[in-house]
Length: 475
Image (cartoon, rainbow, N blue to C red; front, side, top):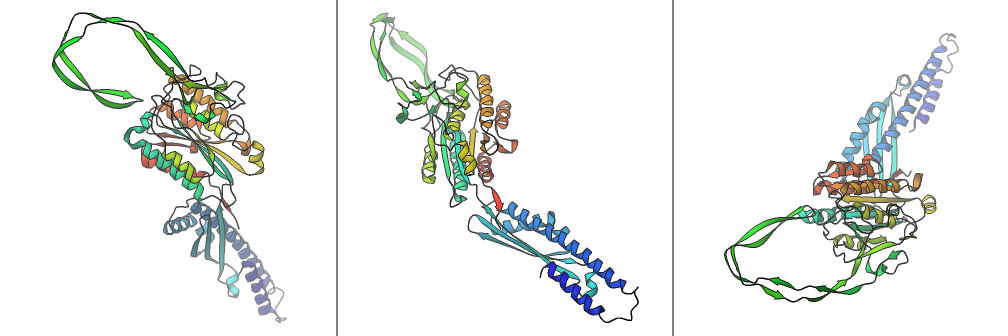
């Protein structure tokens, strides 16, 4: 029974109790007036309690519904704890029952019932009022475009980091697809990066690309004198340590203490064929076009003879199977890290401008409730910077400067709902400057995650997925 009905019943009952007492003096007639005034106080108190309880139930449901993987028991514990700490106990004399029902995979119903002790209405039999609140929430991110920009340098081959990255990326993809509304659009693209990005051999003749033709070159070498080895002694195998992209590796060499050589001999010169081939890798346009998403009147340069290029990027796709397969196909390669390469192509993936035009326009973002997001992850610091078009100068400081400007350009692309969300993740990074740069690159500090191990990386990607799911009260 609502507090409105109870107030009405109280008024009728009180009127019946006092009807016919015509002999009571005027002074006594003031008593029902005072009780009626007191009932108004109880009614106002009940109205406030009802509103506070509803707000507490709404907020508790939103808090619980944020984690779609939570068990029923854990969700109930969270709701009960939230209600007790956020207004329900203050609103009610007692909190009698809490009911929680999951509705499919995207909805949640929360109900709470309790009692409120009255001050004046008890004079006519109403010592307490039954109050209740109910809410339904639903999660739906509207329409979403996401670019995953993931470090594929050789350092990711160490300590199981590539496997951890694949697992974390799958966590994010599952989170988004499993909570997708039935009428929502969801597209995810993938940009593996190292020193360069691979645009794919099929785009060789794209109007925005400047890829030189493959060719063979005849090279000459001169003759020279040498002294052939006749014998070796005192030989042993030594194990030595080398480094590739900061990752230590060992190799064996044969070392001899005595080497006997014969008389000098002449070795004639000759020719050899050097093959110049394109494998899909591209460099950067000259500054400042290298950090701008503009129609490239200045074409994007393809680089011949660059072999250590990651797997080809994957344009936006609505296929969960396809994007997960491409994540699984990533391999750790490349001797250097240039974060702006991956970041620039991630921006292009969700853009509606040339060169990649798969993203919706800013007008469509407004009209059709679209969100665009970038997820940038690296396990190390910038180690090279551009010589234009190549990235082969050992100047991490300059690369950091370009990364900062590129991040700002992305965050300045559009206003209000048109803005791109930028999430950044550092994985087992020790360099403070890189952490600061990545934190500042994110849309805000809550969108930056510093993961020290595989579990923390998976948790970071899970939180990013939850952040992209918007909960709202549906009823």
